[in-house]
Length: 271
Image (cartoon, rainbow, N blue to C red; front, side, top):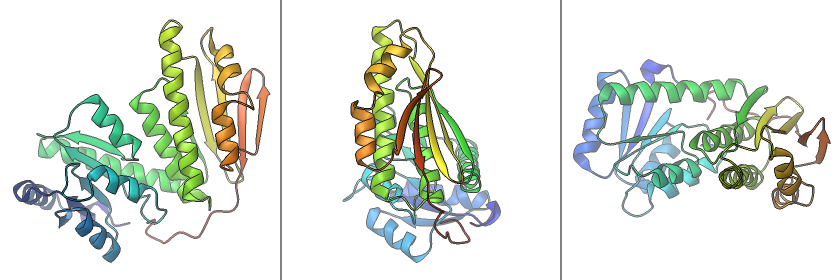
């Protein structure tokens, strides 16, 4: 991956004035902009040379920005490219849809050049940190149906794309299962006093992945018994997908384990 001063940023924006404005802003801050007006042009640019980040509009002709994001984030060769959605759509449901497709960040128009560049730098750096931590990663999910949970699930998926030779379908099954469990826990919290019932700690090491679910509310044990029993929907789906090798209860925590094979060989630039 290039240094920040040489970072190559792909702009996917069908409005010419906005596309050119973004290119001018990037040049002013030392980035190298590459411009595309639709998903097809973006895919051609990526195939020619992978960018260091993508600024992606959602409302594109032909393939939508959401579908393009989903496609790029479901392929090992492009998963590590940070995607920042830049759109006029500002509803909470739009933000959620963006992160559900695997986006790394979500910014709305209008924006300030300083704000855009600041977020872009943070997202590129976080991508590098995830890549460098692929042998040892620990993250937390509050399981409260939040955007933070979606981001954490995306980070875990990115690490597994980088760290393992698991099939994209397996990794996406894990990500979808954790997102679904977060949404279920959020509804559970509303019915039981508003507190998240459990917390998830995910740890990816050299030889295994552990998912530890810890009860943190009075109703937490009941939630674990209903939704993380060996026969429950989420564990069954993850077992069928090959993402769980064992499930056990240890000191009140439900622990899911997956044995990992050695990581695949990755290109020097990490993409």
